[in-house]
Length: 68
Image (cartoon, rainbow, N blue to C red; front, side):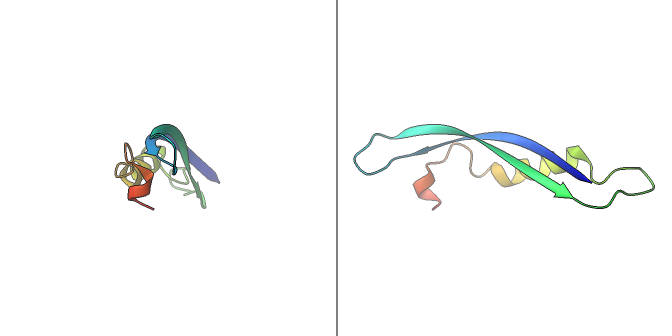
């Protein structure tokens, strides 16, 4: 079974000779695994959403050149 969550972050970048500008990016995390017979779930959507938020929190509102 596959479960997924999607969140958005905002980042800026500046190519040579252009002005600094931003974009909104949608990031989707997909988990694929066996269904647990005891509760009928592959993974809690809340847990997956929290894990994605943990990864993205450090990227939101950054200038991309700072992390590339």
